[in-house]
Length: 407
Image 1 (cartoon, helix red, strand yellow):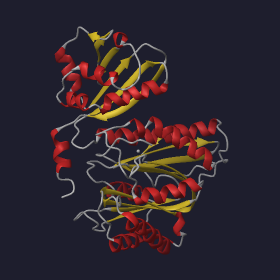
Image 2 (tube, rainbow, N blue to C red; image 1 turned 30 degrees about the vertical axis):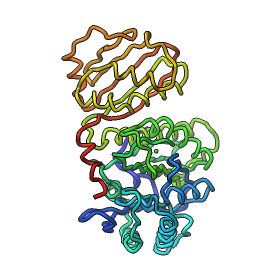
Image 3 (spheres, rainbow, N blue to C red; image 1 turned 90 degrees about the vertical axis):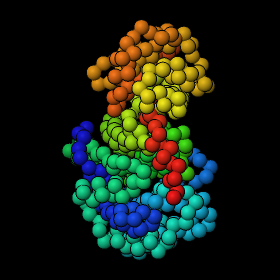
Image 4 (spheres, helix red, strand yellow; image 1 turned 135 degrees about the vertical axis):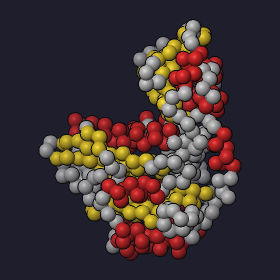
C-alpha cells in the first residue's frame, strides 16, 4: 500500500465540486458534491441516536436496500435534524434536483447535512447550490480538497486521505474526506465521512469491511461524549479499477481492507486531534486484556472522561483520574495489576506500577503531556488483547465555541 495525496477524487471515475450556497454562513463555501461516472456499490453506517436527521434516514434506506449510488450532496450550516416531515421533503426535493441536473435517478443520490439542529434548510438555496455544484464537477485533487473544506463547520482543518495498492496488474485507489470537531462520540459515527474507491467488490463484503473497520476507528473516537443526530459514514465503490471482482475474504480482500482501514483510521484520528478547542491528540491503548471488548470499553472510558481531558489540558500527570475512569467503565480488572505509561515522540515514562504511583520525574511527565500528541498505555495483565481509542483535551475554548454555537 502506498500513501498518496488526495481525497474523494483520488479514485478513478470520481469528481467533486464545492460552492457557496448561503445556507447559514456568510462569505464561505458550504456545499459539496461527490459524483461517480458509473453506479457504485455502496455501504453505510449511521448514528445510533434515536433522534436521527432526515438525511440519515434517507441514506440508510438506500444503503440497507443495496441501492447503487452515483452522487452525494453535502451541506454545512444546518443539520436538517428535528425537522419533521418538512425535513424529509427537503431530502426528496434535493435528490430530485440533483437527479435532474445530473441525469440520474433520484434514488441514486445520497444526502448529508451538518450544523445547527432544529432549523429548516432553505430549499431554494439548496437547489440553486446543487445546480452550481453540477456545473463545477472536476476530477482534480483540488476539487476534492475544496469539497473537504466546504463541509467544515467548527473544524479548523480540512480532513482528507488517500492510498493505492495493486490487485494483480490493476491499481486500486481508496480516498476519503470527513468533517467533525464537536458533538463527537460516534456510536455506529456532528461527524460526516465519505470514502470513494474504484475497487470492484461484492456489496456484502464491502458492508462487512466497513462495519468492522468503523468499530475499530470512528467508534473509538470521542471529543465530548455527545453522539450526533447526523453521524454518517458512506463508502462508494465504482469498480473502475478493473480488478477481478472481490467475492471472498482472500488476499485481495485483505489488501482492500487494509487500505480502507488506513483511510478510516487517519480520518478518525484527525477528528480527535481537531476537537473543538483542543490543543492535543490523546491516543489511549489498553493492552493485556482478556477480550477485545474489554480493551475497547476501558480505552473509550478513559478518553471520554472530562477529568482526564482536563488533566491533559493542564499537563498534569494525575494518573488517578485514568484509573478512576477505568474503574467505572463496567469492565472487571485487578487495579493492583495495572501499569500505566505516557509517551511522546522521544520518550516513554512509567507513571503507575502495580496500581500505584511509580517513582518518576514530574517535570519529565509534564514535558511529555505538553506534546501535540500524547500516547498513553495501560497494561492490565489479564490476556493478550488490546484496543486503541483517540480523544483530545478539554479547554476553555470548547465552552466558548458551544456557548453561542446557534447564534
